[in-house]
Length: 264
Image (cartoon, rainbow, N blue to C red; front, side, top):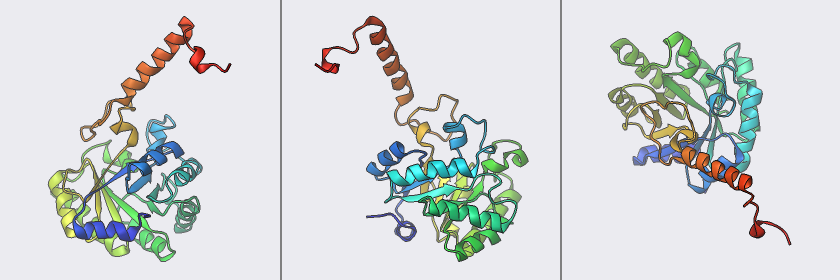
């Protein structure tokens, strides 16, 4: 049964928590579909995870669409969200609408945009044109230069109030969900309770309706230091290093390929 925006909203009403994970390629998308992860995010985090950039800012629409098409082929029945990269919705509404439409043409079912304030009217315009939107508040990585780095947001009363207000405005504009990143758990829980649309936390505590992490992080494939909120569920990075070393050793020793792996 395909996952839809409507079924996600019904999960919120029933109080059913759900998982979201990033996916950047066909094979990962197939794995996550088999695992019945309902929502997949083609995140601009692919800039660091897949392309080796230092942050998300260099990621282009062309790069995002390349990965989005691959994910769409691997998991057509999941709810697929394309991350609008930096500078893809900043210059004009016309630019933003065209880029968001390109995501839907690439097989995504919705797009995600960061921030509140000036983004809220854009969200309404996208939805008017049949483009579903997921919001993103708190620690918004595309704004890390303004935020002074990747810092927890909402510890100050003024910032917390703005996050709560932005969340309500995004809902009123028609957003179907909001990612809450890098904020105190009580604040995220308060925002979640105030909305009728789902919240999806990342570094925002257990009080959200859903949780999202980077696929490579939960499998220990990211060799960089991980944030406090990431849990490694399987150390596949270490296993991959051990496996490739074993392969290289057998090649060097002449024991691979053996008769079982050679055509007669």
